[in-house]
Image (cartoon, rainbow, N blue to C red; front, top):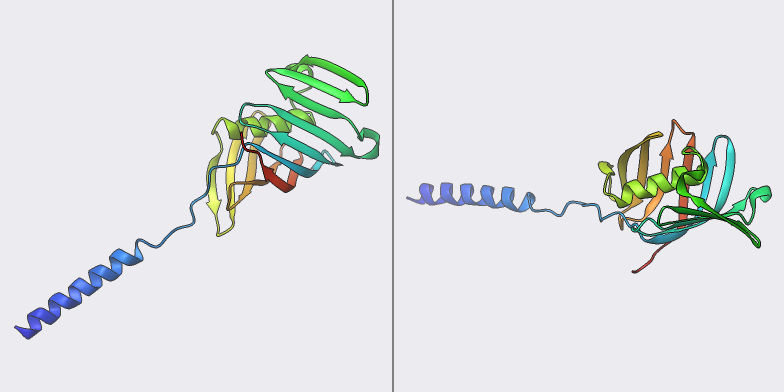
Length: 173
């Protein structure tokens, strides 16, 4: 009888160990933050750019270029299918399709639109970095986020675009 009770306790203990080890918390990605503002640095077709960006899930994107020096002060704003380009007191508006699909601002917007539309799929994760794939017209985009879902970077090798974000601030809507 004692052996039977001990065997039952061993089996029960084994099952408890399996049960509790299977319930350990796994590092699940947070939703990708689509409403944010940040500084960016980017390489695109062998040129280096930097500036500021703000975006939200409704597709409103503002990109302000601060370098290279020749482009300092140029801003691009996308809202409701319209593009507004400005520098100093000069403002020009046009249909969003005015800029070529593979221009720097258009590529960045296409990445952000794809994320907002939920087309980015998780491809790998670690404790603090999550990697997503997003297919768009310019090729496969690899997006990285931190554990809080803030986008830290994106790259489209076919388009020779790599962008990194810093000083990321989530914007509450």
